[in-house]
Image (tube, rainbow, N blue to C red; front, side, top):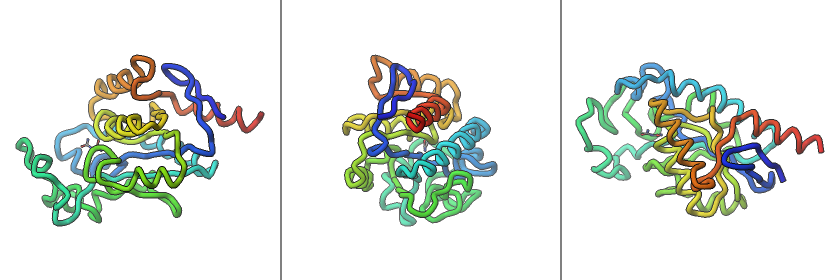
Length: 225
Ligand code: C5J
């Protein structure tokens, strides 16, 4: 067993039943000229999560532990996009509209792809999800059951939306969840701070948070023992 120095207390996992889940590191959310920036968001906040997420991916690949990536996107005919999601508010661009990197959040379009620094390699699982949570309307549950996963380590964007929603879904399904603090970001720094606090409040009501270095130390300690 490996124990990470985490908040609100040590996060212990079995390397035989851990998986990494990297949420929505997509071009349209993160890259200059993408949908996120078009909406007026400061994408530099999200870019801070890129290198730590790449480092976390490298760590899992070195250990040969399972890696799952998600993408928030929709079928080209938008049949999996509820009108409540597409029509809400009065944005200049909506899901399915032509945007700076192809149709916004449509599967197969350039903007829906994962940024190259965090892209999936052979053998890794990529899940396309129509919702904010990665369990809703996807095969994630059966995939984790088949892998025998009990503990999930989380990274990705945005902290308070798709990362938090998926972590809560996972927590309700009985998974032990750890969010790596530098490997997640929000367009709104105060939302990231609040989300980390919410996750670990009340004795870890949703799960744990820890810096990447704490996970690296814990793995190195186990390897040396
Ligand atoms: C994600 C969003 N991935 N903020 N989506 O968090 O709409």
